[in-house]
Amino acid sequence: MQIYLVGGAVRDALLGGKAYDHDWVVVGATPEEMLSLDYQQVGKDFPVFLHPESKEEYALARTERKAGVGYHGFEVFADPSVTLEEDLIRRDLTINAMAQDSDGNIIDPYSGKQDLDNRILRHVSDAFCEDPLRVLRVARFAAKLAPYGFKLALETKALMTEMVASGELQDLTPERVWQEVYKALGAATPSVFFEVLDSVGAVEILFPELFALHDVTQPEKYHPEGDVWIHTMMVLDAAAKLSPSEDVRYAALVHDLGKGITPKALWPSHKGHEQAGVPLVKALGKRYRLPKKTEILAEKVTEYHGLIHQGLTADGQPHLKPQTFLKVLKGCAALKNPEGFKQVLTACEADAKGRLGFEEREYPQKNFWMGLLDAAIRINNQEVLATGVQGAEIALAMEKARIDKIKIFIHTYASNKEGFTVKLAKSL
Image (tube, rainbow, N blue to C red; front, side, top):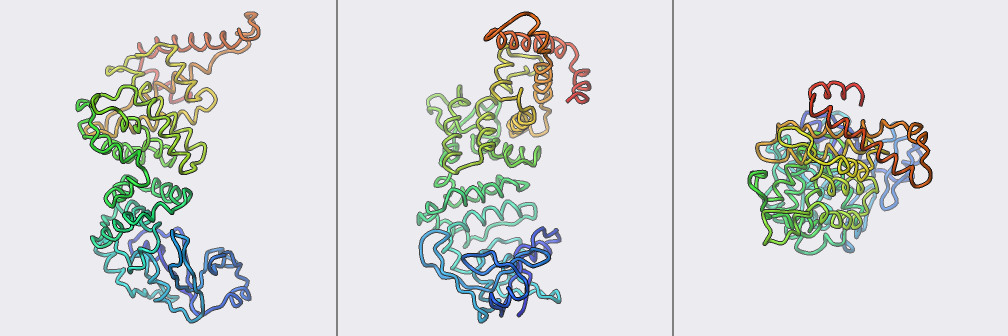
């Protein structure tokens, strides 16, 4: 029995980074031998075991043969006779097909170290095309490793393009697609994931709502960066700088889907695109079976980002009616979930900063809206009830009380924005 560290842990160590997960390959062993050493078997399709102490995964060396469609159509052969080289060749990229033995020696039969040094993402063998999920995985690695300057090998890009054209991506389950998207959203520059997919034709297949944003013009005064696709990618990366939350980043990604269905005759204006985008966001979330909280946040950002931007004028003065301010707060469920509203505002801030020349601009709307919320929730329920209202009148009286608080806040903010900011930082 020989045990090797493989995959990302080897790659990341050679890059000088920290490896968070350790995967191991066991050559020359049987399931029975692993069980006799108190390893716990967890794999159903092929023998994978958990170490009795570390709980890290140890997989028996294996080969695979394509026997069906999609990423699941494989026959797996795990046997003591399978060599390390045979196990490594089934992997996706050369930089992920290296191993390290117990003495620290690197086993690199497919020139992964050379590609690592040259910052190239290259497939290991033609078997790459047997698994359509690898199109998304490579795009995700491109996003993950973008800070190191990695680029896609031309032959790998060509192969991925052929795989997309074959139609096999349509055999991927929604859950597996979303899993890759979710992981990619965690990257420092998640836009790279979608740009790589777009370069091989996969965005048009998997995310037609996003693909429709290409070449859609916007008012140049507010969007000097160009079309809605470019803006969307910039917003996504701005969200990545502002928040570690994948939910916030996803909301930033889909916030302008409504612009993709604006009649061309109305360009560059997109009046009403916020409301128009909500059904598209709902459909996308349903298609990929997104978690409910992810979907709800995306819908709120899509529907209300325009009004949130309009909360303050260019010179920092409150702009909307008190009733409209309260409508937005209630529509975003801010009164019940202030933390969720902060996420809405962060996605809106990313939208404002995801424009050429606006990347470093302040976004005072964020503090302003949190101040509005702070005011709206500071009503005294007992005082309202003491007025003698009953039944349906109670809700109306509560709403009037909130509007009165908002009016006071607007007046205070307009006359003392600097003092408000200091006070807000202490109270929220």
